[in-house]
Every structure is written in C-alpha cells, then in structure tokens.
Image (tube, rainbow, N blue to C red):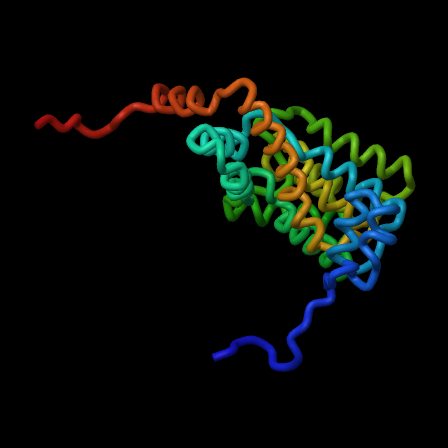
Length: 263
C-alpha cells in the first residue's frame, strides 16, 4: 500500500548524471560551487532561491552564535559516544544532535509561535505592550516557561542576543518581530517579578523573521550550527580525550538510592 498524496512522485532538489549535477535547476560544478558560500547554499537548497544580503548576514550570525557553547549535554554525549567507538564519527555526531531539543538549543519553533501569537493580538487591536503582557501573564498563570527568555548562565543579558538585536537595528532590518520580542522581555519581567533576559533562541527567531527567512530554515539553524561545534569537540577528543573522564565524573557525582544487592 502506498500512502500519502496521489500524483507523480518527484523531487526538485537534485538530479545527477555522469557529467553533471543539477541542484534546484542550477549547475553545481559550473555555477553554485564557484559563487556561493555555504550559508548561501544552505538557503538555496531549502528554498530554491539565493538569500538577500540581509538574510545571508543574519543567517551567518545565527549559525555562528549557537555553533558552540562549551561542554553542553550535546557535546558531552558526542564525546562519550566517540570515546566508546572512535571509528564511528557519524554516530558520535548523531548522539550530540539528538540532544538538541526544546529545552536546550532547539526552541526556535516555540519562539516563533510566541512571536506570532503576540503579533496576532496586536493585529486584533491590542497595543503591542498589552499583547505581550497578556501572553506573558497567561504563560505565568499556567506555570509554563516562556520560550526564548531566561538563561542559566547569561544574566542579566545574553551577549549573543544583544549583539544580534544591535546589528539588526544598525542595519535597519529590525521590524515587528524584534519589537514583539523586546516587548515580551519587558512583559516577562513584570509577569515573573524578576528580569528574564531574552536569550539567543528568541533573538534568532525574531531577527530571521524580520529579514524574511522561512521558518523551515529557522528551525534547522540550531542543528546545522551545532553540528559544526560537535565536530570541533570530536577533533579535540582525538587529541586530548576526556570522554571517559566525563562519564566517570558523572558516575562519581550521582548517588545510588537503592540497597546494594549482595550474593
């Protein structure tokens, strides 16, 4: 049985023959490889069109901002997996990528939804400040974390977030989404009774929305970016291994709550 939509099965992304490779209707060797950066090519692969200068600049900035953030859970998972099987580089990278979820690194989709809801309320007649405050109070009342706000390390500000917002304003591309993110930051502080700094996930969602980067790309940015960081950790693991030390430190730090069985 074949499920899904009926019709001709086809892909518009790539085709190859003995002497040529076509990507989205363009020659890979004769055109794209000669002109595009990898960021350009990523955008082109997903959308079928080349990015504008602003889209390229802020997509680059986003990828750089979140490629690396120290010994995060994803980096530790990758390094411990690599220590267990140094021949399986791909498995170690996959282990790290699988740790990119909505709690760590992968909140871009939730941030986008939050921005759209805030702007929907503004379109319905509320002021932007009131719309943001209403959303923040609803999240607070439901005891739900506000996506894109707060960070365990970066207080009172996330330097990556501030750098992107400042650059967007300098370039004149900060629009409604950035305004909504800033309004939500103020509203979050009121609803929670303490500052909740905007983190880089919200900034990426807001700035990329304002320059017209499709949501599909925004959701993929953390995965693509962190893959580069994981490869750096695994290259270092080859030279100065710490994977087994990470595992031993975890075992030493965690107690055992059940009685120890004896024969």
